[in-house]
Structure formats: C-alpha cells, structure tokens
Amino acid sequence: MPSFFAPSNGPALSVPQIAVAVIEDDADLGHELRLLINEPDDMVCVCVSRTARGALRAVPPCAPDVILIDVDLAGGSGLECTACMKRLIPAAQIMMYTAEEDEEVVLRSLRNGASGYLLKNSSSQDLLRAIREVAAGGVPFSPTIARKVIHNFRREAPLFEQSEPLTLREEELLDLLSRGCPSKEIAEKLSISVATVTSHLKHIYRKMHVRSQTKAVMRYLTN
Image 1 (tube, helix red, strand yellow):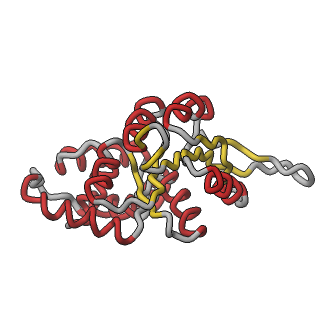
Image 2 (cartoon, rainbow, N blue to C red):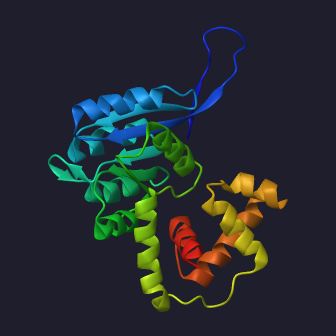
C-alpha cells in the first residue's frame, strides 16, 4: 500500500506516496535513481539493491508499490528476479528499466510478471511519469519497445481469436485501462461501481483468453 508523508510545518495534510524499489547493479545509477525518485512529493525510494540475490532479501520487507529492475544484474538475471518478485510481492507493479531492446527479452519480462518496459535513454520526466502510470495500473513502454510488443501480438493474433466480440462498455473500459486509469477512476468516469468494473474485466479476460490487465490491454491495442 502507498505510504504517507506529512509536512513538518503547517496543516497536517497527507500526501499519498508511491513506494519505489530499485534493483540496479550500477552503484552510481542506483544513487541517481534514488535522488530522482525522492524529488517529487508523490513518490519515495524505499530500497536500492545491486544484486538479484540481495534484492530478494531486501525488497519484500519494504512492500514497494513499484519495482524498477534492470535486465542485466550482477550474479543473476533480472528476468528471473522479476518472476521471483512477482511471486513474493504479487501486488507490486514491476517495470523493467534497462538498455536491452531484444524482442525476446521484452516478451520474457512480460511473461514473468512485468507491467512496463522503459529504456534507460528515456528522460527523467518520462521515468517519473512511467512510475506513476504503472502504479495506477497502466502499462508504460518506451515507443520502440511498444512497437516490438504490438508487432509480436499481431504476428500471433490468429492463435488467439476472441470467443465473442466485446461490448461497447467493455471497449470503453479497456480504453480507460490502456490510459493508466485505476478501477476506481474508471468506475467514476463510466458512472458504475468498482464491483461492476471488476465484473466487466472478468468478462473481458474470458473473451480475450487472457489472465491479466497487461495482456488484455496489449490485445486491445493491437486491434
């Protein structure tokens, strides 16, 4: 769950913060990411780990909302670390933050539980925006990575035909989901309850033959 920050003076107003853990083997970059993440009032870096093994011990107790993971880690694979983290902290949203652009690596990261993929040549503002987006349930990708993912889904589309067409309301819900809107905001925009949003999502998953929001959004974007 997001932590809260109370200003030291003035009215005691709580600002919800996104707790972010960083897994990066470059010590200098890890330090820079900690400073960057701590700048905005709406997020805080709760942990920086340099190895996959160390991260598996240090990150879970911090209960992060978002985990940034590099693909190449000293003494372990970021892809394997992603799969382990998703099992240890199912509620955490994982985003790859790497220089690796290989399509198979991208797809493996998604299969292992990642919900976003950002390249290290992205600007600082793009990184902060992506953290907010993935924390809200979105699926942020660098443009070149998004094209690779969509190309792959289009190539495999004939293997995953929908059992029945989506309703207009289901398409509206998917559109909002693809923009990073969480369930509560979707419910407000569509004037329905959160329970109804959940019910619609179950129908969408069944029709699309998927089991997660990320895969449903990817299927929606390719169509």
